[in-house]
Length: 266
Ligand SMILES: *[C@@H]1O[C@H](CO)[C@@H](O)[C@H](O)[C@H]1NC(C)=O
Ligand SMILES: *[C@@H]1O[C@H](CO)[C@@H](O)[C@H](O)[C@H]1NC(C)=O
Ligand SMILES: *[C@@H]1O[C@H](CO)[C@@H](O)[C@H](O)[C@H]1NC(C)=O
Ligand SMILES: *[C@@H]1O[C@H](CO)[C@@H](O)[C@H](O)[C@H]1NC(C)=O
Ligand SMILES: *[C@@H]1O[C@H](CO)[C@@H](O)[C@H](O)[C@H]1NC(C)=O
Ligand SMILES: *[C@@H]1O[C@H](CO)[C@@H](O)[C@H](O)[C@H]1NC(C)=O
Ligand SMILES: *[C@@H]1O[C@H](CO)[C@@H](O)[C@H](O)[C@H]1NC(C)=O
Image 1 (cartoon, rainbow, N blue to C red):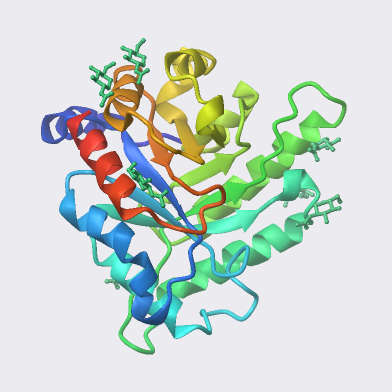
Image 2: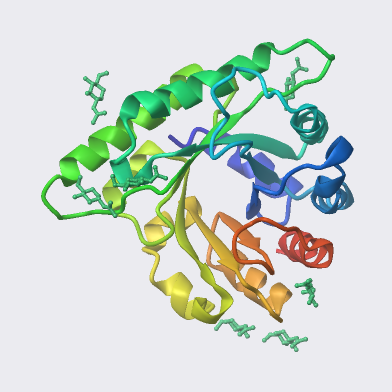
């Protein structure tokens, strides 16, 4: 589903790295989206760094069409005002235990947000982040997993109104390589800093798939952010996120600035 191949030489000429930041923005936006300001400050400070920001009002979009909470309208409109941001809608698949019709319903709700005009806000969603993706490769029933995920991503590509519709799968661990053809980006590692082993972890990701792979590291205490990110960039990893907390429920502005600086440096 990579369609940017022809643009790659131009992209390389404009940017030192193609590594982008994949930010699960599950923090409640707060009044006037003030709780998101550590993220938007880093987005604004490093305009050459590309961000994909996952918005998640209710473990999904909620069932009511447009967000009923004005703070989400304000916050998503603010994210959309940055040229270096693409917003992704969070959709749970619960390892294929969630009814496929519920997945479709979530995608339909996000798709409608492009038509929102009530307060002159732009809350359009550019792509979909599928969480809890089943990484079963060989167990009986694995064909069902790949059919479910192929269906889900095809539905997102067809229905989310965006030029490129980034689709991210998050198994949080190594995925069967057959699943890569259904998404743009696969989260191949999502774990604590103590589990993240720099080059050793990157080496577990098949080299042919690193340019479609994201690494999300949480529970960071102190990390040599620039060195770890530099190693990812050298190895052609596609996307990264580092956070101090365990569950994407708080933002660390200092760490976000360090991460953005490191990604820009490549
Ligand atoms: C809304 O924001 C997105 C992301 O920046 C942009 O692609 C889209 O063109 C905007 N829509 C309108 C109607 O301005
Ligand atoms: C996910 O599926 C399992 C097994 O069917 C179920 O027990 C669990 O409640 C589901 N979780 C969510 C968040 O829906
Ligand atoms: C993954 O899918 C397989 C096949 O449908 C299923 O047996 C298994 O329970 C799923 N894995 C998890 C963690 O739910
Ligand atoms: C995949 O989509 C097809 C066509 O819409 C549908 O018949 C099938 O049940 C879907 N399969 C899964 C596993 O969701
Ligand atoms: C990460 O691994 C690279 C390659 O082996 C090494 O050069 C670098 O010093 C390491 N960084 C840290 C913080 O361990
Ligand atoms: C970070 O790692 C690099 C490469 O291993 C090393 O040169 C540098 O001194 C480290 N910085 C800190 C603050 O530890
Ligand atoms: C935020 O990140 C900085 C830089 O990595 C770190 O020193 C600090 O302890 C972190 N703060 C929290 C509350 O985790």
